[in-house]
Length: 324
Image (cartoon, rainbow, N blue to C red; front, side, top):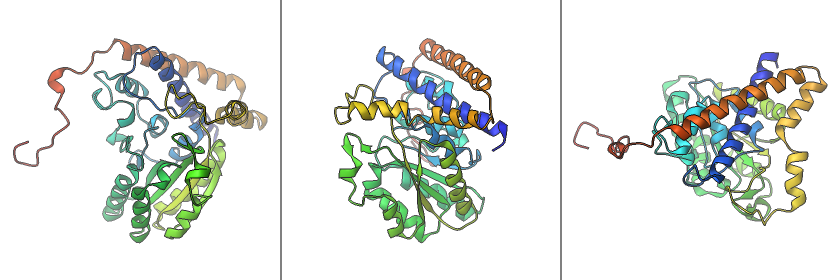
């Protein structure tokens, strides 16, 4: 990869990490309403995939979607305003953490319904194939969503119609509080994809370079008209299912290993420094820049006003020529 791409990759991952850590702190301070699900530890997945995408391409996300949004190019300040429930948020401050969307950047939306994203994503993929516009789609799901019937139906339809889509499974080992080793009948999720007739691969989701390489091949296959595929990224998450989850289902050793052995940012830094592709000074400078930008985003969100009552029904109902 060229030096500029390496710097961009690290900046995106650092932005996701800093964004999530600031959201965690603000939620703990009772500044953010609702529930929040963090993706700390999975930054390499979102960035490794989305660096291959153009703005016109689409992604479908999950309830743990902040990283996907940032990697696809959504404005972190607009996202922070949205999560705080304030005017200026990407969805007017009325969607919150689990419903951030930015259609101008191909972000079809986070989704509070487990397994709700793939049916929407194949709709976008069908439009791309019908219009022959060269667009591709990535549908992010977790190992928990991989058990949903909506996902199976979407995978089957994608194969039948040969749609330009990649199903990307972030397998962090737990669907909410239940271990995937217990909840998934097939011990390897890629076996399910093969059953539907699509190629599948497994990568180390904590290794940006592994994700980037495999995602590039899968997306090129989709863009060239060869149909759908599935990628399973084995990764982890530093925090629980939601902020406040005591994580009694995980050992202290496992939680410690997340940060010491499976941190995608530390792995990236180690790789580029050992190969002298980037310098520690450059990486540290990016860390500081991102921190300053995120503090500004948080401050703006704290000071912004909530949506007025008059906007309650705006963007809720659509008129197709008749009365709403």
